[in-house]
Length: 336
Image: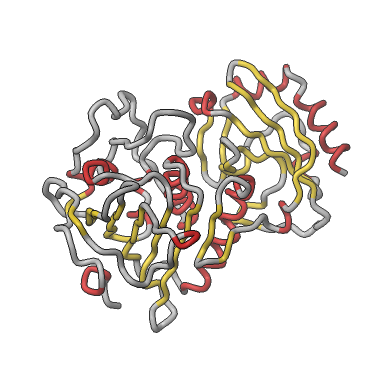
């Protein structure tokens, strides 16, 4: 398979992600968590979409380019957010650095979607971006090489990318040279449309997400939101939203059946909540589910785990004292 570096991404000298150290002054967190892991293509793309939402994107497009044999030739994430000047592009590629705007809540949890997420999908990526009034500049980053990060330099976008929303140009474009083990492009598209539709369907009124020009939609087993309730306390605001489905057939995502309680953050689903000690019948009822949507105040007590999310035991105790079992029963009865 022809590599992207030979095909259409020849440009800035590739550098090692492990060697990058440039960041915006004053924007680096003093307590940076360990570099995140992305066990599935869905989790890597979700982190990249989170970054785009942090940049105030109204449209985010995922592109899976297919080669002549039906494999994956290239992967791309495009958004129409605020864009970046060359110095910010360079900083965005540095582990531990952050180019967040610092003026409100964020969808990304630790600011490390770049450059960790692209390397869960391939061995090289190129990041293009431009401010509102300016031209595209880009930085190319390769895994396993050494050397300081190269400054962003002017570079034209590849011609295979779709046009921006409403005829306008994209602001930020990330293109990844994929690994060979991602399987057929058609199967990857189907998986991303289903899985990303599950994770981001509650944000569909605020942002348009698509995979190869097909807008993401709520899956049939999460099609209708029901009544909601709110609990406020030491972990911020927790919004409980019920989801009722007439389908009794389970639908699996990443091998996990999405029954029971589902953890979310700012409307973005993170996965099923494990270790639910409060109401076991919920886990066996295939007609409905319940989103527990936490504000960023609860980040310290939300722990990603294999296939979902875990809550600190103190949070379960607090939810129990707030009468969560009674609230869940009321929402279930109102949903049905």
